[in-house]
Image (cartoon, rainbow over all chains, first blue to last red; front, side, top):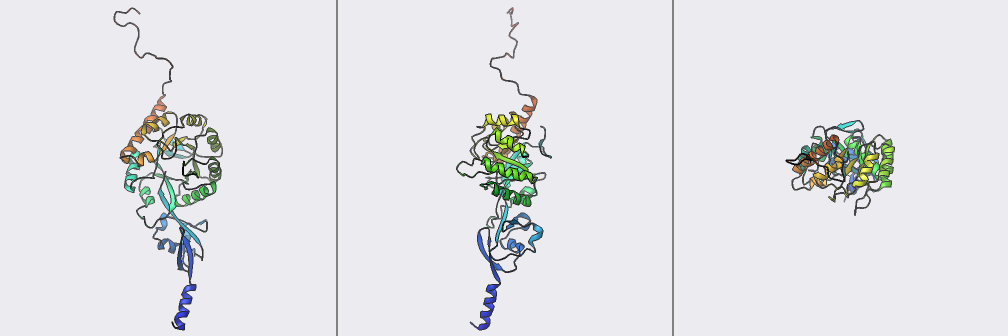
Length: 82
Length: 259
């Protein structure tokens, strides 16, 4: 591997963060927003609630709220229940 | 039948339907329509990308005039229930919350202490708090005092179909209550729902009895008729019991008899 490629790989490595979504770890690009993560798992933003590190994230804040390494994300929806 | 009034909300149906255990979403929607229910419960769960057909929210919001009452099922203490309530209100926009805290999956009996604490917090945050509780008249009164919108004593264990096994305690709760009393859990058949209404419940909440029936849509309709009948009977004034027979036909002047 050339020194140039090594440098690129190292840059790519440091540009990634690891977050936990609904209990599963995911690697994603640094700077990813809550809306990016909702899309990543295939949910419709208008039909889910999102909690990041115990804080509810309302729909109007999801586009701009960036995630950080080790963030805990919960994406929740309604299911049948009595 | 008079409307059901909970706080400032009015519902023309006194049957509250749960949305769990249905074989599929189509059947659930048809059952809700057949029941005439305007208030249905839902549960909060992690989004499951493998089950996109579980888009319950879209299905339920397609029914005009339906209000959602999220529950806190899954919470094992007050803190978890309050958190679930906040998330549910964010998602549904509904002020209603069914506080349901049952830490032991073996019997699913509600925890009265954690339930009271969760209700106290949520009532102070302007939720319309509808706690699922043991049929305890003292607890019911305490929950009324802290501002709950109703109390929902269990008829018997969740999903058990054992009917109104708590009937005597529910009578006491109704007698002392100034907020709607709604029997929740354990009802098996429409006759039990009718009996609950006849004794003075303001509504009944049914899930399993409809969802696992051979024909859930038909059963939903049957429950609606039973609730209606019980409500009308209560309003009409049910005759008192008598310890002795009281003739309905004249006992005198029969044929050739002189007295």
